[in-house]
Length: 252
Image 1: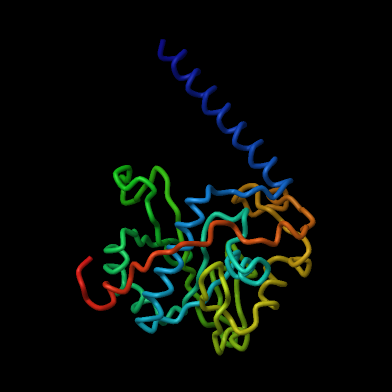
Image 2 (image 1 turned 60 degrees about the vertical axis):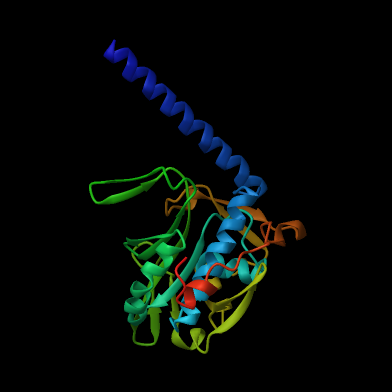
């Protein structure tokens, strides 16, 4: 009986894996939206809250990765993206860590990652558990915070996984604001050199939708962009002012 049970569980898992793999591949070929509209709204809200907390406390940051690409090419979240990416200088880490209690008051978790930190909003706060020092969520939205380490005239991210994740300092400063949906967020002075390195020089005409998180050429589907693909993920609002009371020292 145990063998039959384990065999049934294995078949169910293999079936689920194949279904979602094929669904991902189909979506990749059409650049279909990846997230439900409520998730997109939560991602915009997460970035709004993060920008306001960091900016008010003079913690320098810049959008990076797919979020920077989305700001330049779509003026918002790329419809087939599912998270937010920002970076901060390594020397600003202590300032960022000091804000963790503020993020917690807004209902976010801040967790250490190999590349820096991850700010997480559980979709179901009651379905969060910890085991062997790690935190698990049934469903979540997240904002990745990459730590940039200065190396001569470069500010480098986590190069073992993302070898092109770096900026030359003259590309970053002075920082400027980018339109992102209904928001204006902080980014590098020059985005194009970074985007060329990270996504290839065709990034404004061709999309490479990632079909898995493996760093392998076969994990990407090449799709030529059409005008309809350049619209940001919807909805971009309405967003809520959640940080004003917190920044004024009022308990929320």
